[in-house]
Length: 248
Image 1: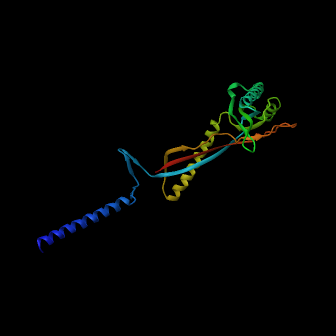
Image 2 (image 1 turned 90 degrees about the vertical axis):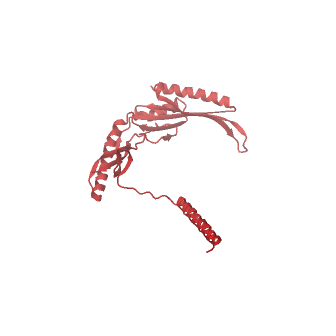
Image 3 (image 1 turned 90 degrees about the horizontal axis):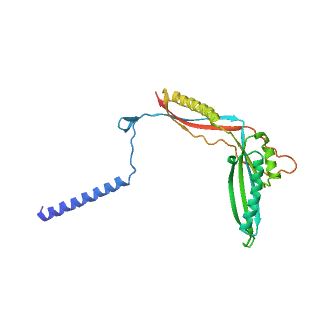
């Protein structure tokens, strides 16, 4: 083989090797990584993760509500926004005075909503303005909530009413339901451990997914002659937990 031919052969082989290496590098970058896990993985120096059993548990405790949340609204209309706002202020003052006369303290009266906006005709022109205000109050005698609603309409001028029930202090009922929920989670975990042929160990973590305790709001039309009836019933306190157990 002549020197010139040998040099050409070496250069060609080197070019082919570079092309193959580049192709392998691109394929390696485009592949999804492969992750291998072992039963026990060191996360930080001195700490390890051990596999366990994770289950959820839930429980429901029913209690009679001891507080009602009454809402009452007033509306006003006028040719201008300022006039509508003034008319609404007068009606709201009358309603608040009636609420206070029923024995509701200032700290138990809240504003749920307040709005002022234009009213339109079919052709899109403004025909006037409407203003609305919605108040909510805590009512601690659930058995005569209907009587209170009637008073807000007949002497307070309310045109929109609503009511929901709750517990003044829900912590005791939640604690009772939480204990039952954790017991439910333990029973499920024990069944899973038995099925897997392992022993259930200690609790590693507990997560509480409990939401607020309050019934959905119910709306009422203003009462006419008959008094408004508001059955109290029972309130369900639902607690859901997630518990992780070690494998002994």
